[in-house]
Length: 121
Image (tube, rainbow, N blue to C red; front, top):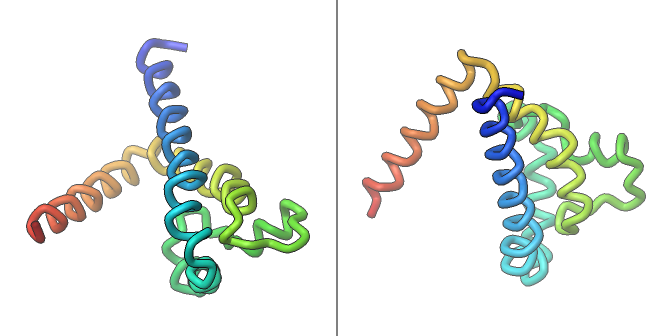
């Protein structure tokens, strides 16, 4: 593995660890455990056609739950949510970042979001 590829892999692993921490600690404690109704609302939104169109993996949480043999899937439960994210969404996200055409579109969209956010301050 060349230096640039190795660096990219380290960055991906670091981002995955950060995302996992965010899901497991920050969001789980601040949102899902404190407001169980929020997980039901988010869970229903994630099953909507709008989410399926915008989801990078196009594999809904409930479809993933069937594929992962989750007996009683619960979006508010970290383990269920993380299995979906790590198996379906991260793989698609990395594929998109590896595509020069899609990566450019992603960078433009993220830059626009950042600019909108800073203009609201």
